[in-house]
Length: 171
Image 1 (cartoon, rainbow, N blue to C red):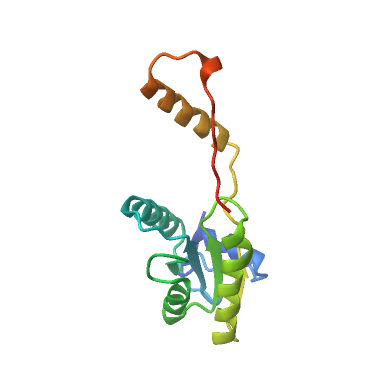
Image 2 (cartoon, rainbow, N blue to C red):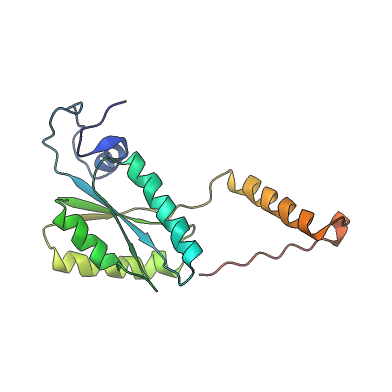
């Protein structure tokens, strides 16, 4: 596969969703305005959670040759607005805001759209698209099974009938 220097392979899918024409520059030049990607994280006072989010951002950067910025809704900086400012300063002609969250709860349904509306007022000529949350991948159930198995091993020998699984979600 190919991608132009400013768009990369991930951006081709994003441009299609934003109705940009296909890029045929094959890395030589590109007339399509750069699409910036802003990843919205929840934020946390826990350093381990921040390291995990940073790892996700590095994976996204490796898959996207264009502008990638990240911001937080709570607890940390840069804020989502600061991340949008940095993407615009880096030359993004349009943005995709991607919520780095598993489900469509309050942050995805209210808080991030409110932040996008603020950015649209601040940058009226900037096209901003809103991506869907990460959602549950079919492999998530297998990962849960593995994590449960690891936790049960820490308890020691136990009858399966005595296991009570309690799952907590916030949103």
